[in-house]
Image 1 (tube, rainbow, N blue to C red):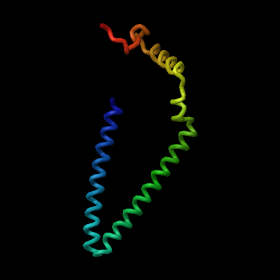
Image 2 (cartoon, rainbow, N blue to C red):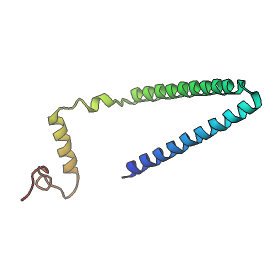
Image 3 (tube, helix red, strand yellow):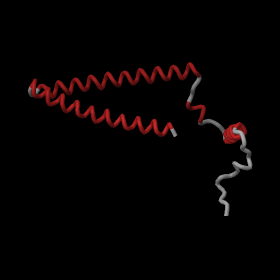
Image 4 (cartoon, rainbow, N blue to C red):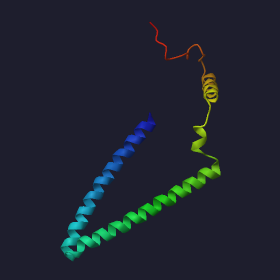
Length: 115
């Protein structure tokens, strides 16, 4: 439940930052064209390209760091998807057995409808 709320909050802030970015770019463009005339638009465009390139480089650096940390810690996303059905069923049974007060009879086939 908290994961859903965290994701919603991140989405909200992403939209706020997006709108703030648009407002800042428009204000910068107006000020740049007022101060530098026709060269102001080109100057703002060059600054934006530089900023986006810098941010792209930072994101790639962070991805490389996360990847190296995952390798050092032995975390791999690929291993989770290569489990056989028997392994998945065994893991689920272990998890159900670890929950107090549950039995296999209580968690039978949930797809069957009781008439």
